[in-house]
Length: 268
Image (tube, rainbow, N blue to C red; front, top):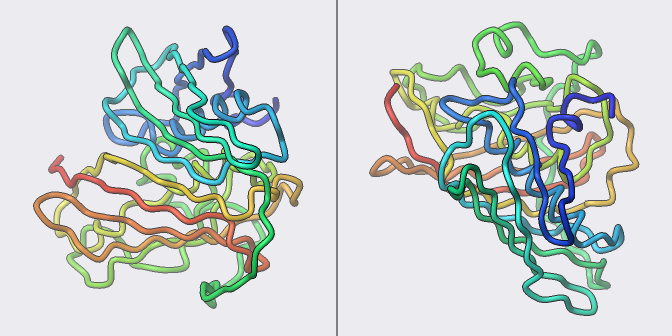
């Protein structure tokens, strides 16, 4: 593995249903590891348990119970049900005997059904040819952002008390690699919360739960230089909680993933 993301999300299988992973430095977001990074680690354990490439991840929901420290975590996976086409699994990540995260997932073979689409990619400027983030994204963002290419195309700067809670742009890893489900899990939480746009003072926003629907999981064979367009929207911040809905498109307009998360807004 010559990509930092692949090295830092690697798992080691202990037995049929148990794995260990190492929470690596450089993926912090606020007071703990980035939620999308943890999602990618969990997803790798689930994929290894299914061990059937054609039975691809379709849905992943994670509840974040606490923030792990740097170092080893243990992941236990249970196959709840294995059908002819659809498998349901659960996973638990623990550290020092404490639960860090709980996950439910669905894996499935492709199904034959009519096609319909009302989710078009926004008309935005193409990715910058240099394939780098503008300086403020790395200089002002949390440590995990230094592993990412984030080229803004939608939204305004956070903490200006503005309207329009929508943010996003072209998204990828600094180390080029094909877009696959673990990368999409990371990208689904890559941008700052859209609700930050409405705030006048800096805040932090830990994730309570994150759901990702993988809409084209076969994309792993794509161009490693490809950037995705990821757009996230919030409509309500109430009693300290906000929702965030995301869509991730390939450059050709294919919908790769949809996400939804619930977060808590906390003062610094």
